[in-house]
Length: 123
Image (cartoon, rainbow, N blue to C red):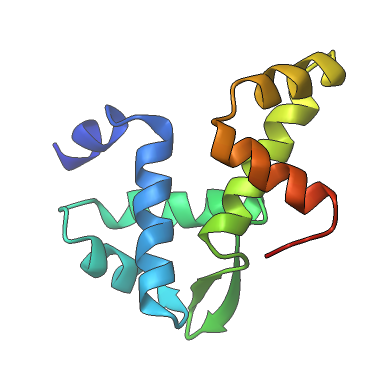
């Protein structure tokens, strides 16, 4: 029954929860420990599958721990968000239009911050 419940969740929801657990831990975690940290009754195989997918995407790395692995994030949350933004940008056929629309939808404060970053003032 747990597996069926897991499959109905939005695709990125479980990955986000696993990443949050890894960031909060600050040390590599086995899939069993991630499952414990999540405390949501997920099946062991579900957590292992999510970690394997995240490793395949290059979002987490792993080190040998007994017969299995302990996983750790390779980027912090802002770095992962930036990576996702690049991925989405790379999917677009018209990169210039995508960038123009992104900038047009920025709040005035975000637009000013982006201008400072582009000018090399990274405060």
